[in-house]
Amino acid sequence: MIIMSIGIWQIVIILIIIPLSLAFTYALYLLGTLISNKSNFIKTKVNLSSLIILNLIFFIFLMTNPVEGPALAYIFGSLVAAIIGNYIHKLRKKAKMFDESFFYGWFILTLIQALTVWI
Image 1 (cartoon, one colour):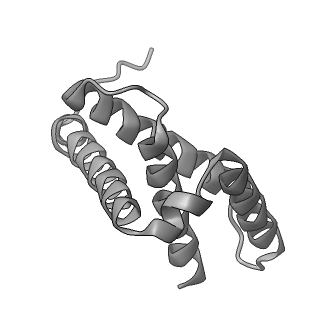
Image 2 (image 1 turned 180 degrees about the horizontal axis):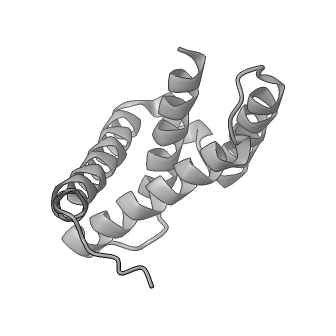
């Protein structure tokens, strides 16, 4: 019988790395809403249908990219990161869950992921 124990590195991951990654995701989400609120072009052009089209184009690009990697994970990753950022924003500001800031945050998170893949 194998007995599993929790090591010190697992405690470090739970106590330090996870909160830091949530804070980083929320910071990127806030950066997206800040940039989008300053730009009239993004305010008028970013909505649910344009984000779905952008993510489909990004998905097709990832599928044709010769670099190995799960393409669908990038798409769902940006959506989950936007949902996490929006949920933290909702808790802090008592705002609605899926408002315009959700679309702005999702847009910037998708662009950041696309830039990191192309680099």
